[in-house]
Length: 334
Image (spheres, rainbow, N blue to C red):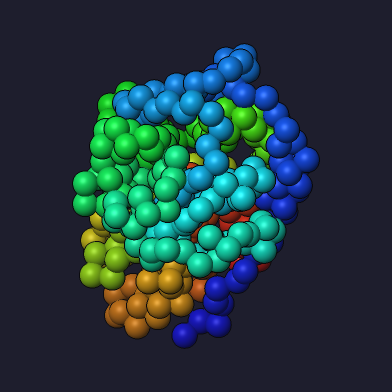
């Protein structure tokens, strides 16, 4: 088995931006922000947003928030709003050391999508979800029912699936627009602006790999790999890092790809998502033990790039993911 294995990577963008955000949280209230990132002048509450086709309204800055998924939890932490989190659930991995965490995040109340009863017991005034599927009758509660109970809901715009709302493709402008929109909900406009400015500067400072390398992004799955397709976060990160996605022609965020297609594509590099339920080391073992995949160029040469799962969904860790991918590519023997 090739000795190259999972590496931890620093998160300088989040660390610097979080410091700016904490210093800026005295911002005034704001109106709604659209998916393109244009934020109306700050004004007064209520704030009303068209969120994935659902009208979200908050009467005042939310004080008791339930976050579902790492992307939403880390968004609030990066904006210096961790003290508003009364419960977190369905976290995809540990919070990076650069973010100051809170007890509600250190001890999530659910390891998967929470049920409505457990969610409502926390008496939230807002549920901030990473996926639309986190807000259904079978999970934390459908949005209309929660609204009738006085609980506002907000879904990461990058996860919207309806026509006209699903990013096509996802871009960093979309990610930064979410930061600004969340800032408008919490009267943290200045903190959001500081975070976006820091992340834009960090992204602009990254020099993409210029060798024209092809890559496959393997997210999960064993019998049939689930890989990054052409319009989601994996494509956005690979584009920014200078990689050509061998599955870019699939018009979706992620897609299933048979092993025979993976072998035929024979990418120069394999980007492996490191998740607790499907770690990168296990992926490497699969690749190197399978008679077909072990003959792939990237496998024989140990050309693996590892990205932690929480950095693979739209959020505050995407810029650092690009920087890490570029650094790891530079270390490969090509």
